[in-house]
Image (cartoon, rainbow over all chains, first blue to last red; front, side, top):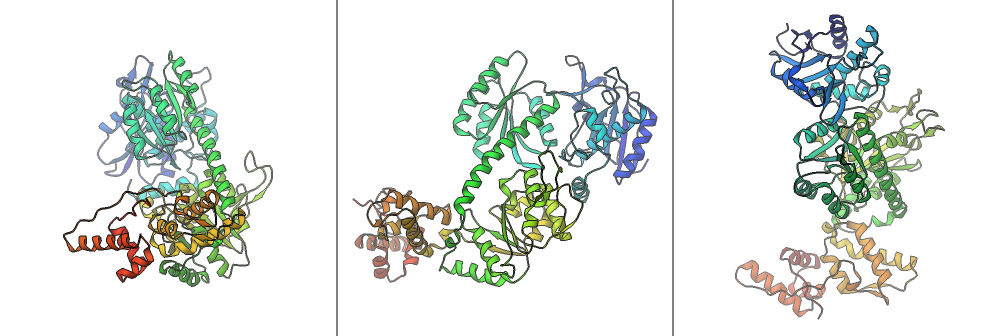
Length: 183
Length: 450
């Protein structure tokens, strides 16, 4: 494991290793930091809300920060449970703006909540886009109006499939600014 | 990108405040939160907001009560009620009482962004309407750039010095000081005088509209782009582009503008052919851009590109000696326009004008004279025709220190001369401007005319 300034990927429960490998490969293209797969944790039962029958994303973010290894610049959690925020019906992912942690769920991305599970390649692409999007927030990037940009807000799966796995030129500039400011 | 749009979340539940504000921040809005209606009112005293998310049920003053107060105090702010299932009646009542819309908890993530965008578009159109009306009024008022004061002479000299150069110039000054007139003057004195002078009020457009307005667009570039359209960059070719209120442009537009300045070329929205950028940029702001840079809402690199030379237009209160000249100029114009026989301003009226601070600057003076011409009778403008004129209490001098003796003596002379500034200045052996400065320094008020 690198000693400093790496991005850690923390699986909660069972996450397909192939997806993690695709993620590492893609994240290396976009972020100038080593990408490390961290030891998996148990499913995030601590974040379960009985009333909503979903998992509170903020609680997982706090857990990620609490248990982040030393030198971990950013940490992205991956889970297969359905995430929510108290005011929203669901979220695909959540992040600190700016901050250390982000989390993404494969629950809705995989079609697990519907009768149409998606093929591996499609799921992997969706996960990559959502992880890049949420990590973008940790570098203080906000939602972008350019629908092709990975930082555009996608509520529909169709939009996630259409947007690119890259920052538009504005977000690239802002991302460079964030790195320059030591974020 | 939407940092200029301020949103307040008012809810007594911490978790709702945190998650809603967190989500809105990710969408790029500037967000503040308040745990009660009372806290919300306190926040509103300090700053303005475009949109408020307001919980219906709160301890103390509830959402509906606050909504009633806001209708009077913040009529331009859109209020969106947050309500739980089972409290829809309250939300409907709120809509009848002026709320813009309501949301049921928990919301669909898509709903919030769309709703705010709808509000902002609506508010943008309303503001654009006001600004366009102002622009029509402002047309052809170059004559307002009048002044014999040293401060204005310095501005005129600077205009002549910089006009020949191609450097970008930032014109600063309070609202109403005539920044656009300075820009026009630079253009007309420059080698680009035979080219067009194209002005854009950046504050009058939403981000998307401003992009299309500046860059132009190709047919089909977006849903409403039925025809290709030249942008202001293209229209300004060979001339001068004046960007007013440049301090309010979005971060995205700042990046675009910087690119145009660096590469000296640009593309229409949806276009693939680069177009040469052959124009000089003059920009203006009444914002403190140094502070905006510190707050990360204005890019430092763009600031240095735009601000090769700064021209500061002084406020009218710092060049009061220009007031008689300006006032008489406006008097002649409005008397002619309104077909009224005015040809003079009384000594009292002029004294009132000299003692007034003119927060709205030359534009306020112009409006004051227009009003005086409309409401006044006869041939002479009187003090009571001025909008800011008030009966004032008399002042009793104290003696003691040298300053108090000076103050007392000035009051005595002013009373002897019935506040005739010229006579009083002559008796005191000082000029009129010095006397006005002393009057201001000691906070002297002219007694009522009784």
